[in-house]
Length: 114
Length: 114
Image (cartoon, rainbow over all chains, first blue to last red; front, side, top):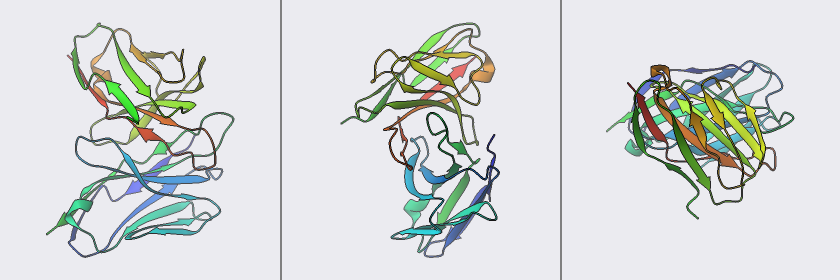
């Protein structure tokens, strides 16, 4: 099955700096890569996703890049703000015979220092 | 729309007891999922369903059962609770259409087995 590894497990940045979180996946058939943000005690919420036929996607201060050859993808947050502090999870999946099954990374605790 | 709702929010069980975690969605989604999230870890898929009457095992199904009698509801049953089942349980749903097929999560149920 799919295996997703996520690094780093914790990340502290100064407000206004950029943050980068990296994930690698094992299944070359995976074709969909969402990123979720989870604030303390809350549900995971989708912040951005990318399909395997796209190399980069941006949404305001957030961007995701995908390298299919190397089987890794990254989340980039620019101009970080205190409200960006949360746990971020990457995930990977492929469209199989039934429901899309997401395999999650272990998460990155991002702390933005004021 | 309320989205995905879960009850209860918190529960403490004694070893060997049973309980049902409730999940309801009002988005007319075909696909529903149950995940568990252990402290400091990512989410692991327990069971999923692609429609009423159809369920299938995920990565960690042992000790759990599910049913899907309606499109809206997807209860998770724990039989003979064990301390290893102490976790936060999230239900999710998705439309089942398109490559991205975003999964929307409920608020979670925090379960402690003592």
